Image (cartoon, rainbow, N blue to C red; front, side, top):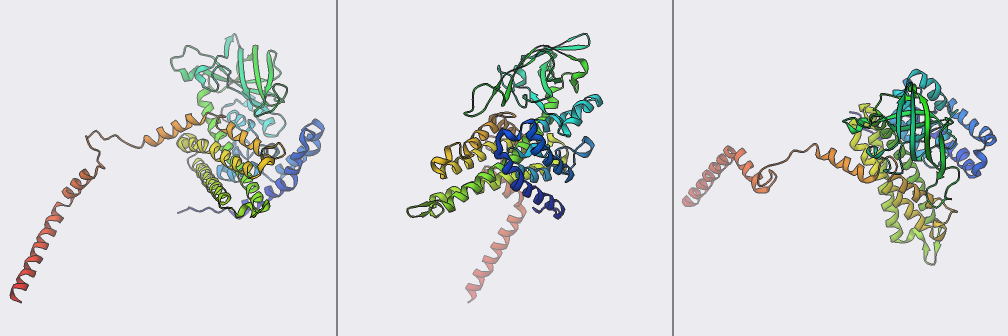
Length: 446
């Protein structure tokens, strides 16, 4: 029987190395702002750290060795990501930033040799970035509402339409684009296909950047509002089978949802740490915040929620490693997706509240955390959809009772028990009557 919560010593050394790099290199670097992301800054700051990560064997660990990654599996990846999730810069240093992780995964699984050579290898090496262009202004991420069309003309696809919240569009080299290719297919889930479209293809336009939270309206950065006007790509730009977008998306989104959850564990821990640091440091007229029972309750609730969420994520990762099939872990993945935004928002909001006025300012990270928590409730499918998935998966294990009263109705259970143990009850009754008769006879002769 293997059921423990320990990390093997060799991998713990790697986690300790990650912790050291996070604390002494990445977190200080993240406060340099855009200086670290300019062409010169990337060469001076980012690339040397990426080279150290590669030398340590910790680069692109989300893929197995057969797909060009390290093959650590989801449990180890979860342990890594809960450290990386403390800082938004860390995933790019370790080659596991969204949306590149999910895009690389589906190219590795479904791409042709030519597509892997052109796009996958540069992605894994950190030489290029990719974008995920699926959602649309008309109906969000619901594939049955997509309007973007790809029409086959000779040996070329001609693409027209608009996409919304295309993550990673700015600075990308390739767009993973969803478009309707077979609008009249009898199965609505086989009407959409995926294309690998070079971002510099004529007709590809970033209308503006969409920023979350209270950031500026428009301008570069953020998520791309995309317009595709007579964009022509060769037939070989098709990723996987024609009409196979929905199937491919489940591979991408299932992994992406778990990876988001793994990083969110780290973000929750950071918020909890800052909350506790504030509680033991802030002095009021009658002592520290940590001395007040209301504050103690908030900290206890936050810690319990964090630990429960972390264990659910770790168990889900373990199941993925065990079954090697996302469909068998669909319920668990949906459950972590549901839990993630609520736990993150509750902890981040409490941390902000315990910091008082400075907690809601832009001099602290909490408002960004709260916004991120709201994003987690929308990205890769809204919470409500995943709750439906969990419920359907749970209910699938139960069968209806068509009797007037259910089998677990206590009178029914008593009747069933009486029938099952009838012989035993009869024997007990005879034994009791015999005993009582013997006792009465003894009393009569006394």
